[in-house]
Length: 261
Image (tube, rainbow, N blue to C red; front, side):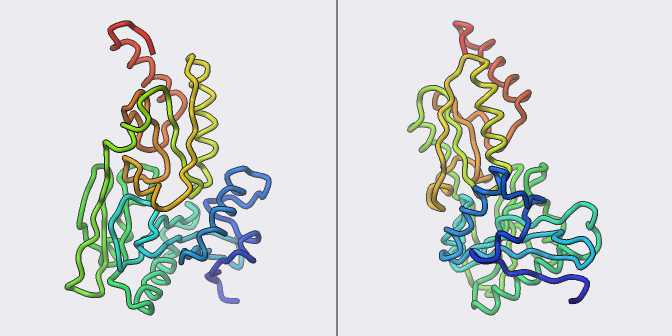
């Protein structure tokens, strides 16, 4: 075994791998993510884990065919990267490049138009630095999100965001609704925290599980995994802390003519 080995996961070996720094099978987020992966592998999803001989699993990359993306992006003919994560202790060692190169090789072998990725300037998605360095260019933006692509076929259409800000808010007109996908193992923790604090504020949260790529692409946020709607309005397009959520609800109450939440 060399210093690093890339493990191509599948339904049989995923139980021995960690992702997003988690490997505890008793953790709800880990269990949900593992079950989610097993359903996605037949759809073409790839999750690769970078394993260090000395330190164990230190990084992951997850990507899917564009028509199976769990992001509101039109990327037919491309591979779309959901996430690329490297343990902070191992940053700056070329680990991310090893994972990204593996994805690029797969795209070329599959005769794809190229590889696309959604990046963000906040802390909930990878930044664009590694991708720009690898030759990716920006083709669309929805601040703080940016859609980057590295094309193999110059004449191929650019991927683009397809975010519908109106559809779901119209569907969930009353009360507090949390929409959440199991694509990220942190989501169950965020859902639990927001639901708990909302009840202390006198609200009755409704949690809607996002169970398909199509449903994820229908979320009114480029984040594509989590959002909070209140009385038909999007109040958070990505995870927020319980404290931040409390402040948002109290501010809405302050601005309400009746002073009610």
